[in-house]
Image (cartoon, rainbow, N blue to C red; front, side, top):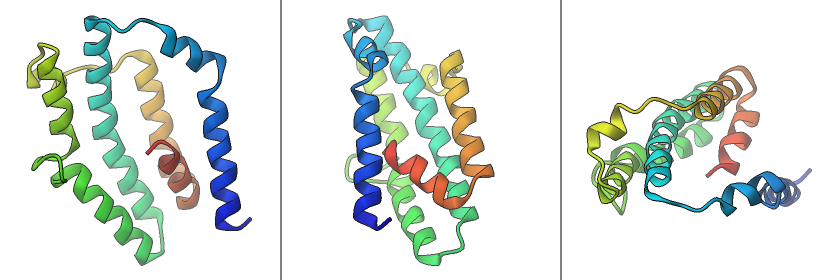
Length: 142
């Protein structure tokens, strides 16, 4: 498959998932403050864990140009980007503050069961599988 074919195939897989009954139900549940607080804390865990996953893909990748692209991307995620001088976690903390939460509540949160399962799956795929599979897996969630 050529790049355009891969992009089309993976894109259609993502769109099919977004059209699934499970996600239709997920997005139909009314957002309220407690749910928003839970979601923002779990998103904080996701953001921190993704840094490890991108590092695993980079470590498994033998192509210097791809390693450089990953590190360039991660600089904005971890260090500084156009929205924050402290990376993406800072953005989540600022959102949590709008929901009446402290930064420490975001930092110290524990994952719920589904978050734990997801984080373990990402870690396994990016560590145990080929770097190409890990790259594909992480890219579709960007």
